Image (cartoon, rainbow, N blue to C red; front, top):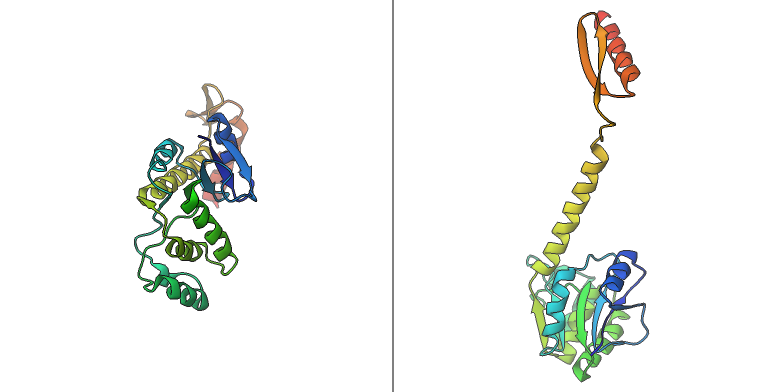
Length: 213
């Protein structure tokens, strides 16, 4: 049984990691379900790779699997008034939670194919992907495995941690070898990185001049 990824657009990080895991990747696939088990990823999404094998396992029993989006927002909080009205005609009650369609697992069976056909069609009828998926979901009614919001929350947390780490790396100044001693005034010594002696002396002269003024 084949597994693979469909990307909505080029994403070098996803493509490289998928290749290292021997997962085939198709960008902007014309076929709704090119693999027996397909992971649809929106470009720019950080995939929780350590959880992907569990999702493949879920597709043994379920037609599709997708994480919840947010606990604090429902279908009544997104999209345009017209699109919410069209969604309500199918869903009936918009006080329902939405799904993180950035990470959608689908099995290549009749319900899975019907779900993706309906989803692709609904995407042409509105601008909000979550409402489009909701309309497709309620129209087809596949066996959906709703994954915890933590699947995406962990991804977001990792992204924040990575961003913070990159900021720290930019701010941190690596030492260039052992520290050297500079005499900035008679009997007053300071230490600095080798090569920064003139900068330290210039800074001291500037500060001294400002103080005298």
